[in-house]
Length: 63
Image (cartoon, rainbow, N blue to C red; front, side):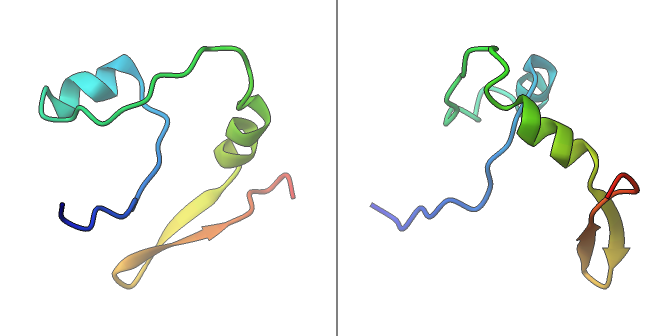
């Protein structure tokens, strides 16, 4: 087996999965029960801005 290290983790909507298409089949559905509510609130507050070939992530204005 080829070395398949994880390079990304994401929270996807059904629309996201539709756009990715049938070739994307390595997903693990979770129940919608607010387990990640605090994490999602914090991620919503992150400000991203272009930086060279990458992106600079900084705490949002609420911090």
